[in-house]
Length: 254
Image: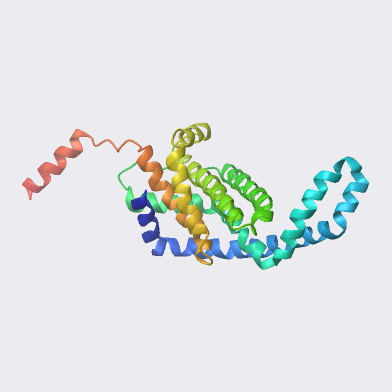
């Protein structure tokens, strides 16, 4: 696993990865700004007048739930746009994976596994749906942990473990779906849940580093390509006997 991480890090600055890195970072920054401003406005609206409007519209039975949400949103609004954007990086980079995972995985396979059968591109719709699900779950986890961010770092621990699970699952399945149908890829992830979670911890650690974390789609995808190859290696290309004989005869004929 550490060897897979080292290979992923080594390839991140390769010429093949640079263009993908620039596209991914540019799109991620745009989404972070939009998401940060949007969430901050939502938090501010709910903390000031939204609770009253919802309770008036849906009735007093929502009072207890709305009181809890008001507390969460009030804390989140107090954290500000910048903090919200920083904490949303895992969600945004997960979404980026849906757009660039195949391009990244193809480069890794060509660099490190040229003798293996090439993977098939995951349909863009499937990749984006899986990425959106992971991004939405990550946002929900962020909202649930916001009140605990001020309690001796408990929120950060919960957020880290949740990101390790969500990001590990997403990136492994995107790598596996290049060689397996969707259902089989998910079964494979469940079968090796411990290995996938530990690999997800490396991705969660990477996404915790400011600025560098914008490259998470490259690191996460490359890492999980290596992990998938180790856990479920595809069959090697079959070399025909005639090809072997030709290789042996050619030097003798020179």
